[in-house]
Length: 245
Image 1 (cartoon, rainbow, N blue to C red):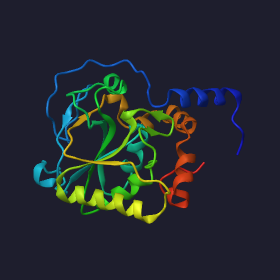
Image 2: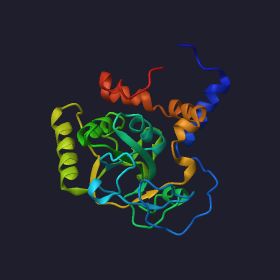
Image 3: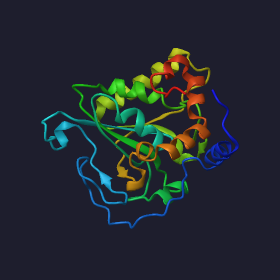
């Protein structure tokens, strides 16, 4: 592989230092309003309904649907593994696990609101199972480092599986316990399992950031050392989820 030039190396160093904390100009903040996953929010955080098919409106195609929520560091990176997965209907970047309502990106980044950057995954359970989503999640995070994912540090980058309903909670706890028992790591898994947390949609410029800004995202990801760390943690098991270079 060719060595990066001086300009590329400087960009990688800059992005590794800054990480996912890109200080974008905040857009106007509207009043908090409960909306469904199917609706498009304006460019400010909004609370999004979380639940299964029984509690959410049917899609136009009549497919069944459910939602899952995962915090695994920068949401730019966590959206991508799920959004192109067969059976996944949509992904949304946002915030969960905090104690304030309608948080902004700037507020969450201070670490004082208690939120973590989170991805809401809407999926068709007849085509992809919750356990399969959990498997993708584990292989895209560092589950043994507390309050940090790769180059991004702080409580807003802690790893959490947010669940709704008894079945999801039991599956998440079972999955975490199995990983601990497997002996794959020599230290305990620190990923939290939290039930029934509200989800707030992030500002529009964060949605599908990696696909909409491929060059900027690629520089960030490479500079952050995400892929190298995932391969170190998971070995060949990381390969289906980590792009080859």
